[in-house]
Image 1 (cartoon, rainbow, N blue to C red):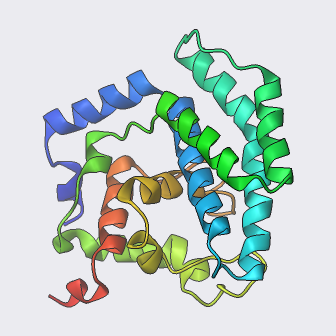
Image 2 (cartoon, rainbow, N blue to C red):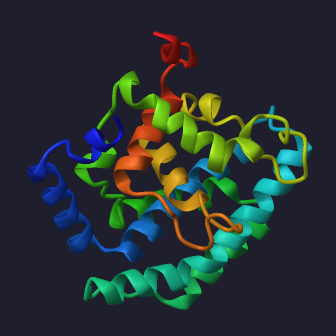
Amino acid sequence: MFAGVLFISGAVLLSTASVSLAYGEHSQRLAANLLVLQGDLRKLLETDTSDIHRHSLSLRIEERLGLLALLVRSANEQNSARNTHNPEEFRQLLFLFGSSEFKPLLSKLESLSRKYPLVLSPILQSTFSPVFFKKAEEMHLRLCSGCHSGAMAGNALPAFDLFKQSRSISRLEFAARMLTGLRGDQLTSLQNPLTDTELSVLISYYRNEVNELSK
C-alpha cells in the first residue's frame, strides 16, 4: 500500500527533487531551525509552561542560537548568496537570550525567517488520507513512540505527545520540528532518515484524529 505513495506522480516527484536541489539542505536546516527557535521562545513566554519544561527549552534555545552563525554561513555558501552577517549579530542574539529579552529576540528571529524562509517540497506541503496511515503508524512505533508517548513529559528533557503537539502549532512549524528533530540516536544517527514523502505521511497522521485509523 505505501509503495503507492511513492508513485503518486512522476511530475510531482521530479518537482520535489528540483526544489530540494535548488533550495539546498543547508538552507532548509537553517530555515527549519529558525522556526523551531521561534516556537520554543513563544512557549517560554507562556505563563503556564512548567519549570521543568522552561529549563529544557532554555538549554535547547541556547544551543540552537549558538549554531545559527554556522547555519547561515553554510546556507549562504551553498546558494552562492551575497548575504553576509557580522558575527556580532549572533552574539547579540545570545546576549538578548541571556538577558531574558525574549520578545526583542523573537522579533529578530522572525526577521531572519523572512530572509531565510522554509521552502517545503510539494510532497511535504501535501496532506495524505487515512488510507496511508498504517505505514505512518509503523514508523511512529519504530522511531517516535518510545520517547513521544507522553510518558516522558515530566522528564528533564520532555518529549511531548506528537499527536497533541501537531494540532497545537502550524503545519509549517510542525514540519520544521520533524525536519530537525528526528535524529541523534543509534537508530537515526545525525541525519533525518525519512524521505519527504514519509515525513508528509507522518505529519498527516499526527494532525488527524487518532480514531481516523479505525475507519
